[in-house]
Length: 166
Image (cartoon, rainbow, N blue to C red; front, top):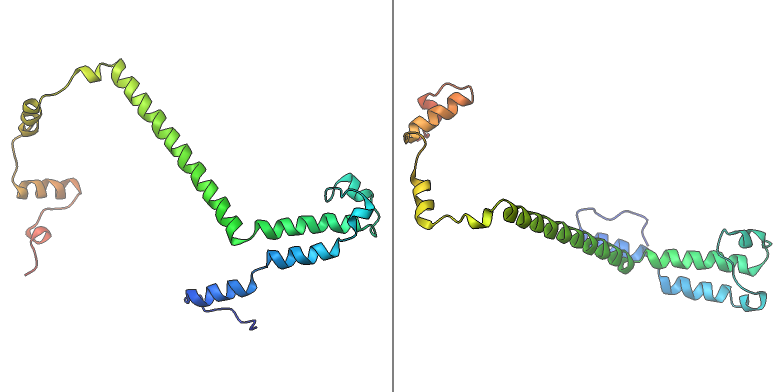
């Protein structure tokens, strides 16, 4: 196996490199099982790092078994499937929180509309059309609109600013 890094622009090379360097939970579990076959003769296994674990002598096989349980759990938690499951659970939680916030906002808007009489003041289509066609100022030509825009931006309207190159 090469110790060289894969080409970062080649997804297939990256995938092959990751697959070749991924820990095998099955192999770790198998090895750990062989290491602690005699633990039943020594009593219960205390949690790793706890007071009962610290009180055990270093030669007690339960101390090693406790460390192996933690190691196997770490390997299991860092498999692609476990990581994917955690990311998926986080995404579901975010989506649920977003939906809850949207429902709250819709309920608040609905309540506010009822409180202020918003649902009793429907506008007819004729009134809406009349409002859309009513100008608050005289209609302007495109050149007048363009000149007003340039002036508001602090520019001088010139013919070069808005003519197209042929």
